[in-house]
Each structure stands twice: as structure tokens, then as C-alpha cells.
Image 1 (cartoon, rainbow, N blue to C red):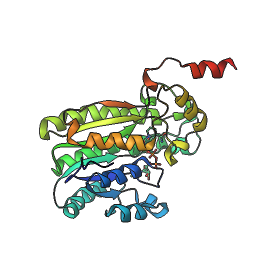
Image 2: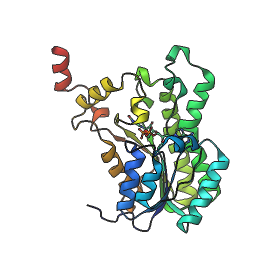
Image 3: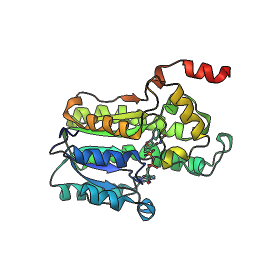
Image 4: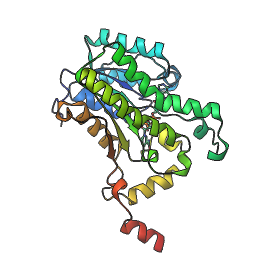
Length: 270
Ligand code: NAI
């Protein structure tokens, strides 16, 4: 069902760990829609990961980069332009990790070194990506840069812990850098706030199955899948959304606008 809406566009896709990853689905659809791109992930994730399979399918090169390292990012943007033959049109930041969540620290007993790591990997790395791209003049006019967020940036979900702060930082960076990049190079910057999704990062949060189910019942259209998220991302990389910038875009089946649903009433009344 491809329509070639990314024909001739070049990009970088961060964060494809395995076939469940949102970034993995985006890579497959971007290829279908005519884009060329490089794939990147943290060097440690490459050793564990399956990214080579995806690279073969997409005819894409892999360039390892820790998204918190400016040196790695400079190398990534420089090499990507060389490999793809010009400036880039899109970048997907699909990165999240909290050592506190991973190691089960409660929100009242956070390790602050780890908290800083959470903010750096999951939030500030987006600024690093944007700043590196701008300094290297690596993005074409009307380019589109996207990161993935979660509604815990606005409302409390207890087990999301310090990732909630990281997502708030991420969304704020999209507004501040979106302004700057819009003015300087006509580049757009947005975040997509996605439903709970069954991936490695998602299922790492305690109680994930319960809140996946709850969100599904609280959304008139049900939870948005990783495939649907990828479709939305492709559209936001395309020329059909050239004036959309500095937004946090809800992609959640209606969850964020719903007070209660019959399904939840029924569940509680049982
Ligand atoms: P995933 O676990 O497949 O992807 C997370 C990626 O971040 C992995 O590929 C991992 O290697 C990468 N990463 C971690 N540290 C890194 C670093 N220092 N440098 C470069 N890459 C690094 O999970 P998923 O769900 O596809 O996550 C993608 C994005 O979607 C994340 O930002 C996540 O917070 C967000 N999101 C996920 C939801 C979910 O329920 N799965 C809901 C809403 C947002």
C-alpha cells in the first residue's frame, strides 16, 4: 500500500533494537515509501541486537552511536551524509532508558547518578542530536525531526518514575529547538506521545500489562500499535505536514481526551 511519499528523502533512524521496536517498524515503512537512511543504536545494543537483519532488508548501513556522545553524533551525521549522498530530510529519535526503572528503584529512593543518566539518555540526547545536526548544517529545508514521548510527561503514572521527567524535558526541547530550527533552517521538530506499546523499553516498566490493558479500555479507538505509530511518523516525515512544528502530538486512540469509558465502569462494577 506504499505511495512513495518519502521518495528521494534521506534520513537517520535511531533505536531499532528488535522487531518489536517502534523504530524497526518505521525503518520498514520508510523503505517501502522510497526513503534511504542509515540505522543507528548504542554500541552495546548492537552486540545484543538484531539490527543487521533489518539493515539487510532495508539496504541500509549501520553506524553505531551512543546518543549521549557528541563525538559519536558528529561521526553519525557526517558519515550518514556521505553514505546517502547529501543532506538529510528526516531524523527519528526513538530512545529511552532509565537505570532507576531498570533496577527497580522506587521514586522515593532514586539514585541521583542514575537519574542524571535517565535525563541524559532519554531527554538531553534529543538536544544533542538537534544541536549536532544544526552545527553540521546536515538537514535540508523543510526537514522533519521527531522524538517519541509518553503522556507521563503531563500526568502521573507511578511506575514510570524518573522517565516522566525525561519525557517532560524531551517535549520542552522540541518546542525550544523547534523555534530555533524553524527560524534558522525551516526545519520542523515535534514529539509524538504514543500509547503503551509492547516493546523492550515499554515492558520494562513495572505493571506494564495492567496499564496496557487499562489504556486500551480508556481509549475509544483502543491503544495505538507500533505499526500505526510508524504510519504516523512516516506522514510527519513527508511533505504533507510541512507546517507542523513545536508540537507534542497525541497518538493514543483518544486516551488523553477521555474521562472514563463504559469498559472501565464495567470492569470496576464487577
Ligand atoms: P525499544 O526498547 O525497542 O527502543 C529503545 C531504544 O533506545 C533501544 O533501541 C535502545 O538500544 C536505545 N537506546 C538506549 N540507550 C541509548 C543510547 N545511549 N544511545 C542510543 N540509543 C539508546 O522500545 P520502544 O518502545 O520502541 O522505544 C522507543 C521510544 O518510544 C522511546 O523513546 C520510548 O520511551 C518511547 N515510547 C514507548 C512506549 C512504550 O510503551 N513502548 C510508549 C510511549 C513512548
